[in-house]
Length: 262
Picture (cartoon, rainbow, N blue to C red):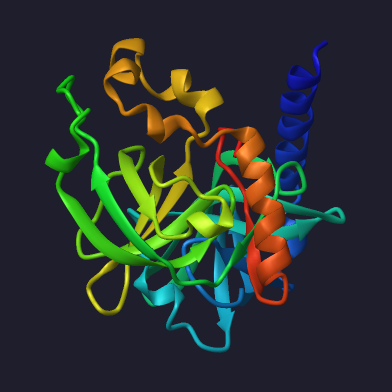
């Protein structure tokens, strides 16, 4: 059995074990970190468990969690069997009760971990056309200017006035070339979450050159600017070291991917 297949098997076993043990959390306090939000974790007492749904009694301020709806997918983190785990899911309010409904995408966070830093950089971004149009002329794309809310070597969170579809792609220009970031990169939207000021926090995963064939057909790759694929796994490692050297006193957490290596 290959290492990849063994990883998947172990992950499934750990996920099944977690789901089968949810009743053990009843009456206990859990800490849920929601990657899409800035700030610390949300603490809650588990009141009831039905299959993969946990009824919660929040401990402290519920303002951060109150913005979620049943349609908004989140990634939650918590400790289970002495491991830090991430599971996708939905946190929502129903009949004045808060619920956490766990999904089926499970990631042990110690598998791949990129520290995020609460740093603001100027960012220009433009959505790539989904059709087979020619996007080579980047100046013809509809560019928007914003700032980063946090950043890592594997991704970035920005604020935009419009919601973006998950899995859509953006061309990015991050004014952080002194930290090793190329002047042009491609990222994939992982989530869009509404904020109190009617904007959206957009979580974006950078696409390394080695993974471009997983995201685009060969014809589209040929039409995209070559500069957009100068970001590769080796450069990501170098950026990780540079970020650590410059900002290690102010990390805010770690990114954990979905099913794609980050």
